[in-house]
Amino acid sequence: MFPNSSQKKYWSYKSVNELSALRIKQNQDFISQNQNFMQEGQIKEYFLTPQEEYLLLKQYELYLRDFCRRFQPAMPRSVIGTAFHYFKRFYLNNSPMDFHPKEILATCVYLSCKVEEFNVSIKQFSENIKGDREKAEDIILSNELLLMQHLNYYLTVHNPFRPVEGFLIDIKTRCSLIDPERLRAGIEDFLDKTFLTDACVLYSPSQIALAAVLHSACKVEENLDSYVTDNLFQNARDKLPTLIDAIRKIRVMVKNVVPPPRDTIKMIEKKLEICRNQANNPDSDM
Image (cartoon, rainbow, N blue to C red):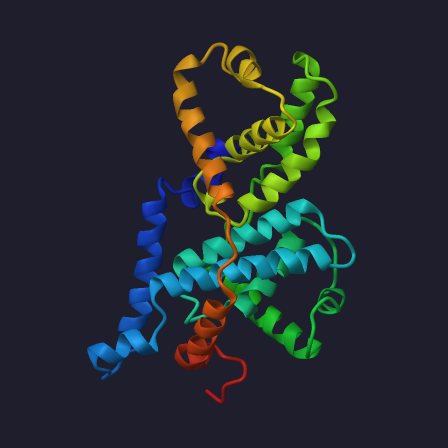
């Protein structure tokens, strides 16, 4: 299904450089529309740079993960994966200076609950939010249509969780590995970390799932190379180099996940409060 999906056609990218170019474009577009009569030197001090925006969004991805983990009732993993997809997609088309990530984050999670049929009302949802819950409800409901518009209404997301189950069943059937279920904890930990990278907009769900399985097998000192070459790609050896390269890059991305420095994030958030689009600020008179 994935090869024919809107996710593959519209929300999968060829390289990290392509993603970087999109993010730089959104940053520059916002600045060009809002710089007015500022001097060149003032622009750099006043607005966020593409790198500052990137670090800020990385921090809010951590907030998204923690919010979903604490959510009651317990949230299915498919909801979390879909929320991450929405969040990443939105900010490939928008700058966080235009739409503050704390507001878009909650909206992404709420919309993913609906799409993945995890039935919680807005009241139940807001009970998981600290602070003014009535205000949070208004912000989420006000942003819901906006979010869908910026996702171009392509709301179906293919996550790697189903391919993982397929690989585990296949390993149990065609592989001599003892107790494949002991791979599950390592797989889940790996998948959680992939959502803190750009892997889900660069690689297919099956590639990410296989990377997770092989990584977990390595952690328990098992080798599944022969399973991949002799079973999965027995009749498609020409595709092996591409797969191996993808898996290597996914594992490197996960290995390099590091939380942004707290002091840097505090500085960026202070800067954001000044330069953000006040027309999209619920606390602004504008």
